[in-house]
Length: 81
Image (tube, rainbow, N blue to C red; front, side, top):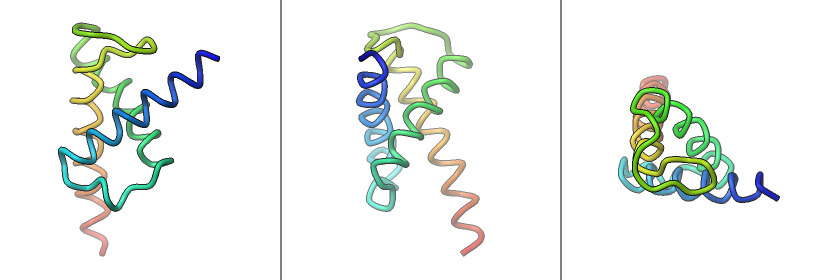
């Protein structure tokens, strides 16, 4: 049951990152979940575990990590088109 919360929180983090970078419209739910989960790992490994937590993810570092991930991926995907 814990993995369901992780997916939900990952999707929310990915959606927030997409809204901040203005790339959210082009991302689907699966991409939001992946961006949220991977961004959470990146953000927490760089910035640590501080601030409010939900489903084992520190929200502020997770959102920052997801924003970085979405910006980097969209930069490289945008260059190919």
